[in-house]
Image (cartoon, rainbow, N blue to C red):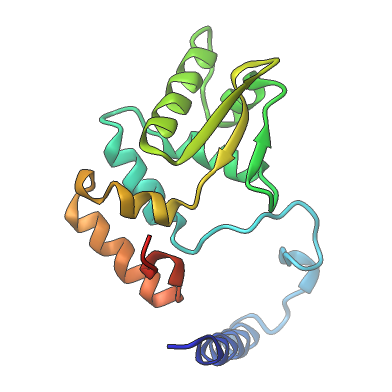
Length: 171
């Protein structure tokens, strides 16, 4: 499916969803919805993120990575880089608390870097001060042999559904 066909498919899906929404919620106040075009505080998230996060957690053997990764994603802008001035804030947002919060967060960051999801450079707050977030589709393709085939196939199928051509490009 080419770009034009994908745009038509998306427009039809949005039109259908809007008609259904109007039928099911006829008295809906638009201000009760979060519109990413109107509201501040949004980031772009791949439609495959739920599967990406499951893959990450399956790779890390009982040390879930997804909450740490998602916090980074929520702090990133279009430049794919996060500057971490206060690691404790990131640790707390990822759900880590207590005296081992920072240690746990740092260990998850190290694992994310080992798998290639992020690259880190040292700065004033330590070795994770500057963080570059890599394209997770391309990372997952590179480490395919470490991923459960069922999860990889699920991601493959989802990328086709959403037209994520980056997953299907040659490295």
